[in-house]
Structures are given as structure tokens and as C-alpha cells.
Length: 256
Image (cartoon, rainbow, N blue to C red; front, side):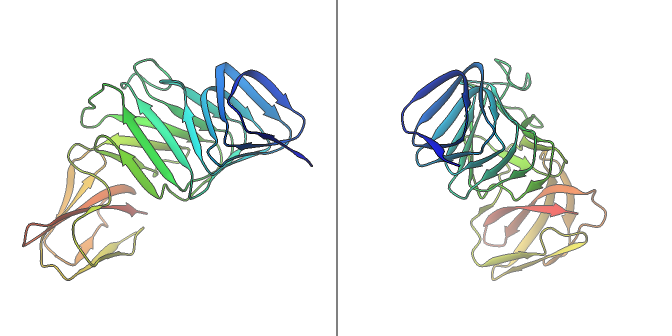
């Protein structure tokens, strides 16, 4: 099947393709809940970017570049599977906690199918200072989820929660941040774990604490190397390690 290649800025209110679509460097702007439709697949590559409030309806979607719901705050519906490559970027904007797509709410991508995550998640707060415990459903999916974002760029202290089936959540964690390590040569394993985790580091550990994604401390371990998580519910947590010489590291851990 031949592929239609878009290489210019395109503002779409409704468009139907009879073949697969490769967006190689164009800005596809979905206006007024527009529908971008084809029986084939879509590949977003090069410097390609898909933004706006609308529906992308293809047999499958592969993203190597940029997806951004809304023009400020909005919702993008993808009626197929979504596969994000390691070069991809998804941008989410937050203006408040009023809900999905609301003026004082947040962006959302809803996928009617399976999702493969990789690449970068960028989150921007639009003149909004979140409160501890605020959470935002940034990605909903009806199928299965594979992988996680490889890198995160936040302008506030957020954590990404993958533990609930069908939704990827963003949670404000206050002063806690994920994968923030000033500690060198440190290993934490196994992760995920159903029981214990082991910490290996050349630094002398002073204190180890575990927080949930609301920023509440749920465990403080007397052991400096072996942490028992049996008493904690299944979910995603933040492990905070403090050393005798003042270094602090925070690592996301998953209890299964």
C-alpha cells in the first residue's frame, strides 16, 4: 500500500485518507474536534507534530516525534493502538485540577487500544501551582500497557503512576522528585519487587524512607541495605535514601 506523506503545516477540520499516512515534519493541527481518518496506519516522524482536540482514527499509530493534546488544554482521542519510540515526546499541559480537557483542567490522551510507552514526557503547569495530592489522568487506554516513559521533564515535582490498569496518572509529590540521584554507583534491585529490595552503594547510608505518590511517608527502614516492602499494598512508591555525608537520592520503586 502506498503511503501519503505530509511535509507542510496542515490545519484539519475533517480529513479522510484512502491509504496509510506518514507525517514527516509537518504540524497537523486538529481543529474543533476534527477527525483524521484512514483504514491504514499513521507514522508521525521527523519533526512531525500532532496537536489539537480531535480524533485520530487509523488501524495503528506509531509516534517517533511529538504529540500534544489541545491548543492550550484539550483531549486527543486515538482509535487504535499507540506505539511511542525512544525519540518520541508527549507534552501535557496543566491549568488546574478541574478535569480532562477543561479550561482550568489538564490535557489527556485516550487510546482505544494497546499502548507502548518510551521516549519523553514533558509536563508544563500553566500559571498553576498544584497542591500536594493533586492527580491528573494524562493517558487512558482500553488495552494493555507496555513500557514506561524513559525520561521526564517537569516544571513542578510530579511522579508518574502506572499502577492502575487503564490509566497513567500524574501526581504532585511536593518536594519529592523521581529518579533524582546525587548518589554515585548505586544499585537497587529487584525493581519491581513483591517482597524486598536491596540497596548497593559505596556511600554510607544514614536513613531510608518510602513514600507513596501523595508524598506521605509509609515506611522507614532500620535496615540500611535490605528493605522489606511486604506490608505495603501493590503500587508505585518513592524510595528516599540519605547518606552520612548529606547526599540524597530518590528512586521510584514498584511493589507487585
